[in-house]
Image (cartoon, rainbow, N blue to C red; front, side):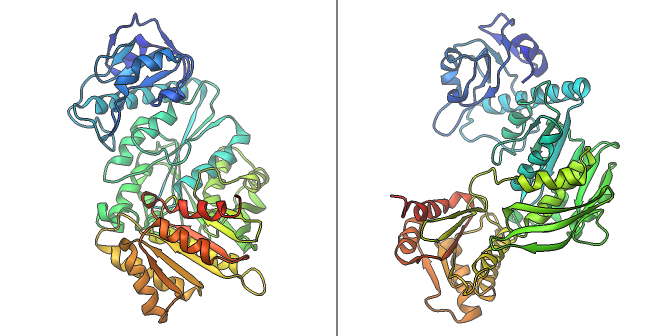
Length: 489
């Protein structure tokens, strides 16, 4: 964060000083975990389900923090955030926040992040880039950050830090040296993305797709599109909106923004598009990048055909911010998977390939992962035996049974050899496979992660390819880790 005194922070957030002179200067990072506190940092006292950060304020200062941003008095130099009657425009309310202290801290954190990003934009030309979509946000954010890095110092969140805490926390990691701030925006309701845009106003915004993720909250894909489009509505007239030409609901957002629109995709009307797409034996794509600035051949290091669209979004943003097609192609070729449990392809010494894509799951991302599994398993002659270990897809509302049934049927149509369905919440996936292909032992329903891991350890053979995917809350990544540990001990 840029250096600010506690007195300045108090003024910015409308808070009051407590146990502090105000001369204490924050020169380090903003943290909500005392284990991450740096010398001169600012500690966020946030309540949680098990512990309350207010109880660790003195410990944070002892570890080097210059002060604390708190929602009530603490035994340390602090700025006490003013109370709020609601979540202060933030997207979510912290669990365990019984007295509103957490909401007060989050609202103050948002105001502090806005102050810092506004100052940096005015003084150093910081460019804020926002990305949203039903799937692929984190992978695309990682690609954008790696493609922009050669153009100047770039900050992006680790993993999926994309809500009312992770969003301002990431923004406050920007310093006077930062040229690009890449932010991922999530939503669980109308107005959430708009609120995040007020925290760190983007000048470049990208919408990847509108799928079925969180349809239970939004009611329909059109409702999801309305929420995702809040990003392009927030862009200034001199900004850039990067929209997926291959998704009609996304392309239709062009009329909702003052910014200049750049369409990306495989569609002929896309300004930045991919032609001559090919996949190698690991489902890594290569394609010709075609843009108004020129053409270049791209070979991706990340896995999955769906990464072509993600890469085009990253390419379009980099081209708009000064990169050449050749620079973009080189950076995309070097770009690696950064965030955990997202199309992480590992190979055991016995030739078993494990695809750990268990961070999250919705119908669109599961279909993409199954197609990648089919591509990898059939890249050799004879084809390798394929396993799809799939758990529930959360937050689908009334569409849950139908969506799970369709995935089971797709596994049959893609000729996946073995389908392991984990958990009763995904039972319709197992039933769909049986109805589509009259499967017997090819489809197996197991009760939990432990049962899935035990089954696979016993039955996976050298050379098999195993995909593991489910919504993160079900913890299926443990199955992938168990498979990898099985031969490492």
